[in-house]
Image (cartoon, rainbow, N blue to C red; front, top):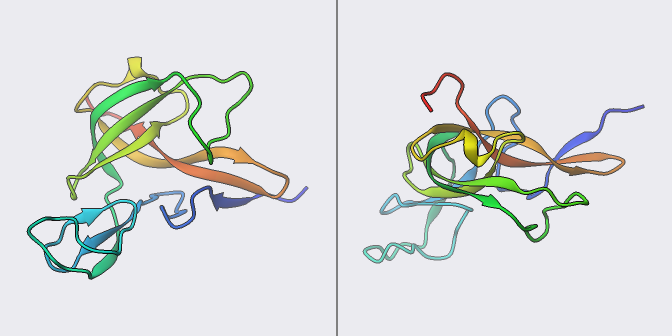
Length: 148
């Protein structure tokens, strides 16, 4: 039996580096505003009129800004188990960029395991698989040894 390929469930939104995955974003070349996901139309900063962006790897760590329990199945590409089991979602303020990115908390982490201000890091975990591929997404995992 051959090993499955690891594939991004949302191509181009994050790297597939298993050791330190990174979200892929954009940064305005003029005012230095960050965007996620990548954005390349016009700078949404009202004080800037630039239309030029650099692709950047965003911070892999941040702090929980808010969190909740997802009591209903989200839309595709999410593939829900049957029966559906709720999971935790966190809005995380990225360490360097100071933008807030929404993402699921890692498998096994519930709303009872986190608090606002907790340090988290980006990890990749399987969303679903088929005969050839394991489709992964980014999730947030509490940083080991961080105060809770």
